[in-house]
Amino acid sequence: MKKDSFTKTEVKKRGWTDTLIRDFLGEPDEEKEQRYYSTKIKLFKIDRVKKAESTKEFKEAYEKSLKRKKSAKKAIATKREKAIKKLDELSYRIGKILSKEQIERNALDHYNQQKLLRSYEREEYDFFEIKTFKDFNGSEEEYENFLKRICVNYLRHMETKYDNNLSRIDADLGGKVGIREVKIKQRNKILDIIAENYPYLAEEAQKQKW
Image (tube, rainbow, N blue to C red; front, side, top):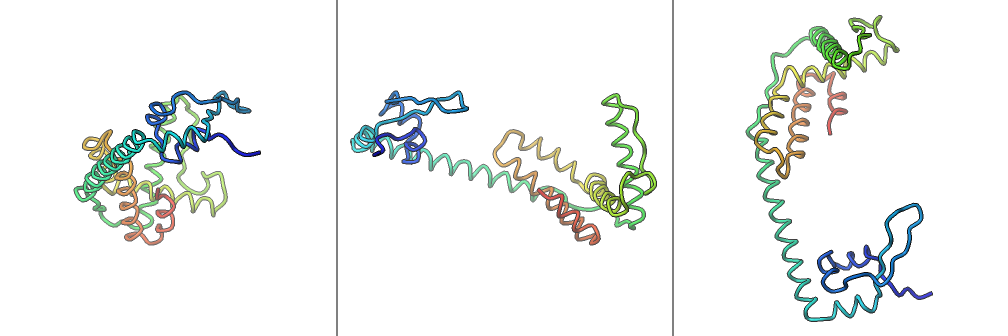
């Protein structure tokens, strides 16, 4: 059976916008129920769509629509580029290089403090500290992986400017285009610095990248 209608999605793939559809096509010629969905499929006769596309008025409106899209994309790109420059203003300095043993002690203390705080916030008081492998519910390999994870977390939050950077980003770029990208890039730069200074944590740092 020959296809005689476009869906609204197919019309948009031809370059139409909602405004163009409203102004040059109006209501669909037919609406069909979708199985499992509450919305209906809007159908427009192919001949009617092509006829509208052939008019001078449509072609002019279509060209204006393309220009607006290009202008909007350019504006977004400019805003994103401006936001990315914020990365150059942030600090990526890491604190004094610590021994593996010291980092693990600090990381466990930091982990326990955070877990205790969250347990009180949830009014759950069955929290148990993890100080050694004996306190850990898992295998030795799992414990080593756990240690590496909390060591990277500790270094990121306590030995770099990661949290301070986030505060500056939120203060300067809150609600603006590019803020999420800036947060991701600064996080990854911090993790690269951790990996560079603590090679045995490089694999874990890589895992924590977004």
